[in-house]
Each structure stands twice: as C-alpha cells, then as structure tokens.
Image (cartoon, rainbow, N blue to C red; front, side):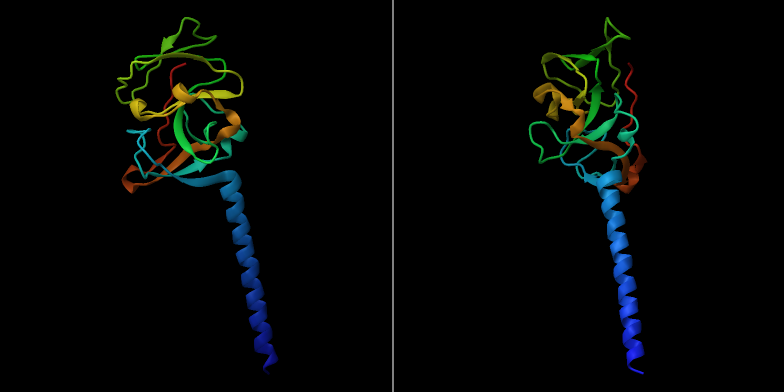
Length: 189
C-alpha cells in the first residue's frame, strides 16, 4: 500500500517539472524573440515618456517591416552596447537631416528641396546647433522628444539597424497613461 502513494507523488512531481520546464521555455522565447519589458530612465523623451514609465517592447514586427520615420524605438547605442536607449526615428535610409536651432528639415527623393518636419510632440529646443547628416543604407537618425536633454544622433551619429531591439508596443505604467503604440506619430515625409 505504501508504494502506490510514492509513485503518485513522483508522477505528480514529474508533471510539475514538465509544466515548469514548458513555462520557462515559453517565457524565454517570448522575452528573447517577441517582446520584453523596458523601464524608461531619464527625461530625454519627455513629454511622450516620463522617467519610470513601464513599456513592453515589440521585438518581432521589424523582422517583417523595417523601422519607419516617427517610430519610438529601444536600441543599444553604437558607443556603448551595454545600455539601452529610447528615442524617435527622425531619418531613414536615403534621407538627409538638417538641424538648425531646433528646426529639423528633411530632404530625400520625394522632397529634394526639403521640408520642415511637423513635430508637435517635442519641447522647445533652444540649442543653437547646426548639423547636416545623410542617412546611409542600414542606418537611422534618432532624436529624443526632449531635444535639450537628449544625447542622440546629433551627438554620436547614425544608429545601425542591427542595434535596434524593437519599438514601443505598450505602456503599462502608469496605469492612467496605458496606451498601445505609445508615442506613435507619423512624421510628414
């Protein structure tokens, strides 16, 4: 009579271990290839994202469609692959981005004479800087929405596509700001 309860215990333990292994495998696959959490640190994306906003990053959609101008992305910057940053894509391959005194002008084959970008999400940019960057194939030009507080492509150059982790898919916290594709904005092109 004692052998039967032990075998049931081992059977239950074996089922639990199989279940736990399946759960761990699913979580690993989801976190590695599909989506992962991200906590915003800093003020470079204010007012779009605040410090400590909790986001879920979509890691899979760029495998089917490339990043677009206006997407908010999480990436590893080329100068330090140990950190993550969050910024907005302003220039895609083929664009020339000219920044002067906070005004961003884009030119490409569609707009050879250039157009001033409509960016109603940014704060004032009092920086009196001027730069022109040609976005080459496989690279992107990114900027924070809080331009005076953002360390971005204006300072360290183009972002290689291979450094992009994914785009902001969900804002879960604060609950009052819950949003799908938070910060999404179509930049005129």
